[in-house]
Length: 495
Image 1 (cartoon, rainbow, N blue to C red):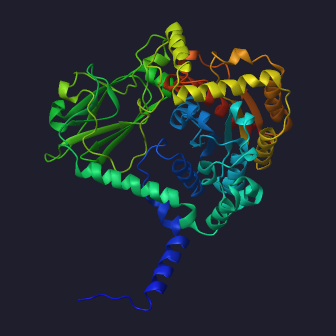
Image 2: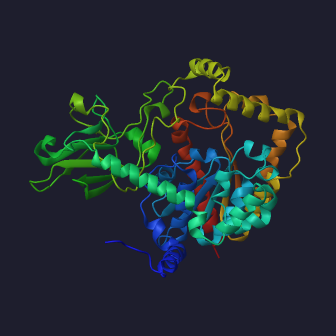
Image 3: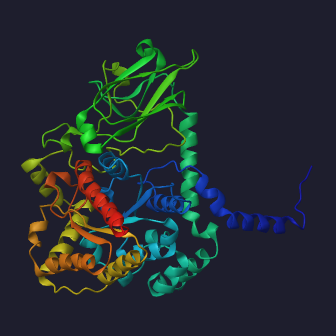
């Protein structure tokens, strides 16, 4: 039998496309995002924005941290736990908007388009000197930035910096069609689910324990056959240093993929959980909302990211074994050790400095990029400070947030002590700091925090991106800024 198209086929196809376009926000953002932030920064950022626009938990204080790649230093889960543990009456909803290469001018457009709908109470603006030295609107607008900004506002303000007529047409089409605007996100979504499907169909036997180290410590996610749990009772240890670094620990226990129990641990020591599972149950899966590292407590400490510890060391076949099957959706995502957050293998002291100098003198793409950043920052020693370009943009952004009644923590992000002393005392850098500090004096509800000298050299991956030791250490300073912002908000509402 031969099938032929009817005269109505094109009309039906067009109507279907229009329907998918018009209803895009009603279905696309409900599809679980399976990849982590490193896979597609734009997808991560826009998914977070749409979640914020969907509503705010009742009674919650919403905190939105944002910035370029330096915003990696802000761990939303850690900050939430530290603040709520120290301030039991505070109920936070903390998110992070991160896009490498984004400038204050880009975030002003983003907040201008979606800021009111996100309903933030506190904004943490994380900036670095490099954000002001190469303004995005003085050259071609980067593609990765263009795809996350509100297209119509971007076209109006940046029409001469978006790649000529083709770039302008691209933004014009994106402003009238969801399917066109989010085409890269749709592709990323499809790729995520295809990858998940392939992993699922090639999964190994789920009765294999995974996520353990040889000494009995587990990773953030681990699993074990229920038959290996003594008398149906799991005993695990919460290290006091973990609580010091993270404030508290949330744990989810699942049996054969179905949530069984949630716990929030606020005290250290040995804990027990009774696993009243049916006789047909096979596998226990455990996930925590964070990990901890002894290295953040001592310069020569263990560099691993650790979770709970079990009484008995695991069988050798479970050690360093990954999950035998993927999880379709989850609230927490791992901070992976292989993603570049520990570039110099955990060295410290002079050994780290020697390795860094060796890397910097190399001919790799990374070394060339780092030398470029170095030249750019050291160039300010010969320059006069002029508060134009991105300085004007950050003031416009801060002023707008202040007018909306949003408390603003303006944070100057950490710099490696291997480069900071070379320009710290220059007139340009001191004027840079004075300008940012002046915004706090000029606008209501704004405070400035200088984290530039917060970390030692070995806590960095490069000139200004902390590794995960540095990220852990920055949790407390960031939590302090949030607590201060909350106190300011309450004070401003006192009669």
